[in-house]
Length: 401
Ligand code: AMP
Ligand code: MG
Image: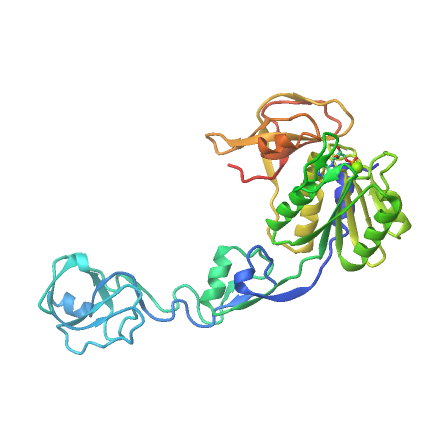
């Protein structure tokens, strides 16, 4: 048996680099950018108009000219028409390129235009107003997005702007989810009273999908031969096996035994924690990792968030790793000699602090309670009384705040 801290260290030491691949930028959301993105030209690429109105030379206005002949109307995307005389202007739209001969935009609200003659009706006009100047945001060749970050909507938008239709991203591991158990039937089957529909595979798949990670699913009955065959095949084709069930002390819990027979080295079995104590972790000589979680749905869920996701972040070389802490909202007592992951609801108080209120449910079989709670609060081992107001780390599994 290892402690939570030891288990975490062992798993962290097995972080992997799966290399990089090129993907269409529309499919890159949630992936980790593996190259810097550069501005292919100045941003903005021209002096861009930011208000619909007229363009003049500020010089003319300074000299007292308030009435201008409209020489042309310039739309966004047009090649700009120059003005030549000091009492000329062009009507010009937001997003259009300013002609070099003009330097100031007066919005429609501040002019009256009748029969092609524009009269300025405002006094407060500044030189260069309502313009977004060429190269103001980024110069050609500047880095606009750094490698190592998770690709969010802003990076997708920037990739589109600089014409990067394909992006180098960190490759993800090939993952298979393997559930075990004779009592488990397919979601579309009608279970007898002594059977249940299997859900852990869908839970795991859904959590992984939030991190742009696809996974295959397999199910094995509690049968030694079949367990051996399926695990053996899976070790050939995948980088990571995420297993659920069959790792406890039961007569039909074959998973640890089969894994070791097939050359998967046990790095630990059992963690001093609740829920999820029977968690088994190992690797084979090719470096394939096996996270074999206990089958109780809350145990699987906790182990996935507490151990697998941090490993994934580490392996994806995500530059921004965040640790979230919350204030305990009530006194709690927990006397067993193990680290307790307590389900909590998380809210925000008037000071902007996260407040965690215990919402414990009925143990690791009570997956219905996961719909009421928002996070696991990690209560350190060796302490019995946890007081309202103390701060502990939380592992959110929903958007909080
Ligand atoms: P085990 O770890 O195999 O002893 O399973 C512990 C408990 O979790 C049993 O009550 C199982 O029925 C349940 N369980 C195991 N795997 C799943 C699964 N994939 N979906 C839902 N419940 C499961
Ligand atoms: Mg089982």
